[in-house]
Image (cartoon, rainbow, N blue to C red):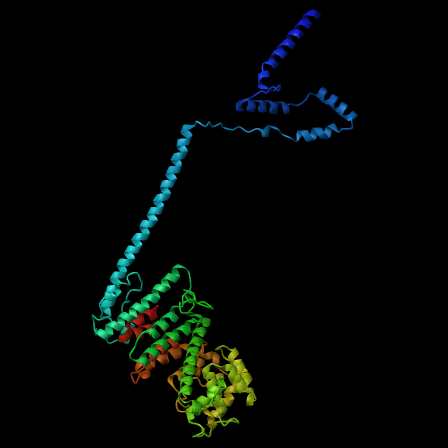
Length: 541
């Protein structure tokens, strides 16, 4: 038996030696066993099953004894091993061969369908944009034709302006018929003379360029100072009547001050605080917005008066005698010398004068009329009744009434001065601060009391409170309070002819309607004026 065993061992050794010699030509004595993916997966599953088998009790006890001899806690290791799960280390995967032609074709088909959908969507957007532009151009061509026919002119001027955009000619409103006496069939009743036609064409082309710039800025979400640009355009157009052109530019400037456009450059871009599209939408009836609009109207009248005063000083510099001193106080003194031809003629005897023989309250009034309240405070230093402090409070009130105790004191002093017939400029100032008699007319008391002075005074007198809120402890009559509604009705009741008796100022009534915040009526009125047909459209913008 031992011999048989020895022979078997020798035979096995020879077999192993021969198997090693089979790979001797590879230059390596290592033996590699190559397996495919399926075999590796099967082997991993077998190992996982073996690792999850539970040892029998006897084997477990013997293992504990051997480990305990070496100082190893077998129970703790057993708990740690039990918390491990090797079953999740394998994951069944679906093998996809490189020659899966059917799967490749399915994927390619899905990608082709998606690309076709995206291309169809792109073509639809392009066709929609093209059709929209074509429709818009056709509508503009029809609107342009109607507009030029309404203006009594040919459309030849528009051949190079086809890409510009402008609102269509608005329909006549019932409100406009109150101011208009036009004949049916002629929307604006503009004489179609060659000179009038050329002027209308120039206006339309110039204003259309501004509207085109507005639309371009809207497309880029940029603010655009359209009112400022319209004012500059109106000033650049040739007009035989320089006074009419100035009145038109003043109308645009008034609107610019009301809406608060400032710091706009020649390209219509804001350099400072912006006025955005739709900023006043839904806020026109709020108290704060109305106060801002009224303040803008007063600011326009103050700037306008400053220009008039400077023109008079430049026209008569020797009489003004202000030299190089261009402060507001010096300019007012020079203007008063021109106004009263001082010293050739003395100032009225009922006026309180200062050391330089120029009436104090007259100077304060004209400084307030300029809107330079700080200079008025400076000049009032040392005056009786602490006038400078009252002026500061009036400035800080921003159009709202002063405290009741101060109003009471001003009312008492005002009625006393009115009974005694003292300095009318002093009466006016106390009335201005205390709103003692808002309906007082100073036409016969103040030199050169103009319509603009009257409007400036009334805008300061207007209150947004009800009449019952203005009863004072000293008995001021509440019905005298000038509410905005009362002021608006009064301006409309006068009518256009009251403000344009000479026929030289057709737009003054338009400015008055803007100052009284009656915007719809203002547009309707200017629409009824024959020579301002083009401007009425753009004022409405």
